Length: 319
Image (cartoon, rainbow, N blue to C red; front, side, top):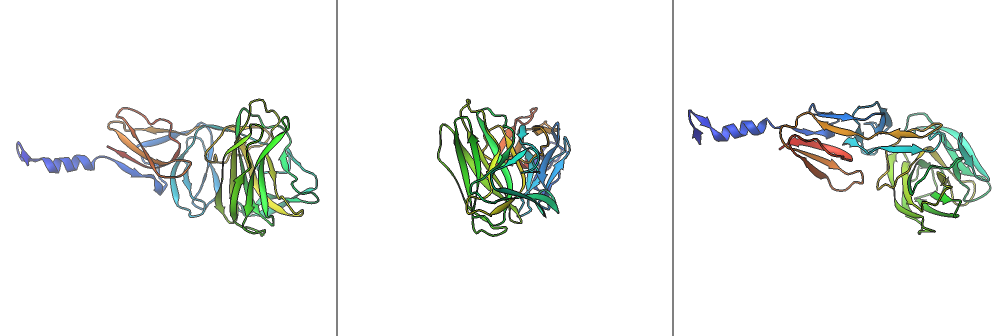
């Protein structure tokens, strides 16, 4: 159809349609229509499968640690991290249970090549724990994260222990074999005790036999003596695991928060804020939630900015 002096409407519509932008973010490049604001630094997994730190306001293109495929632009809410010296588990700010041993070992870890990690083992007593020397600030929830690799243990467990009640709830990790670098075969939480509940837990294969194992706990507000705690091995004695890092946030989660290093005090990772520079038309944003599962889409009206999106953004397009 032609209108007026030779104007072809289908051709005009095609030209107008082709001017709408559409960007795939799984290539690891931030398109010119987007910017990310974050007041402080944050970490991501790079294309080599290592956890690396990005400066404030730098986009975090995150990669699957085993397939090394780009998952998209990582956006997270603010989180505060507790636990002393997250990369010196068993050292400064930590205490070892009866009969436990601590041996520094040089190994490739998800944090860096030729890393110094803690080899934690049982000497004379089963179920001894490594835990923070001081109480973790708490409200009514926390999420513990441990970056571990098996040496020769059959089982390892994450523990929420409240010494005031007293009571504990744990997540038991069963290894496929009691050998170095063994895979995790199962994870299970114990039942609720005295109002303490494990609400979510899981593991992420970080490659090279390393796993990020995490667990969220909720508990009564009256609890006051909680520590970041791990039983490297349950039985028999003389069994060990390697620990590259450990961290805890004071919020329940349905997915593990990205890593932030702590030293003598707490550290806060600020929220990622996504901004559109072109708001002349509606925009559709596709992202994968931090919990995984099917991709989600959200539409942003013309003249507006995205709300709080958390997950991996994979596509943005004008409508």
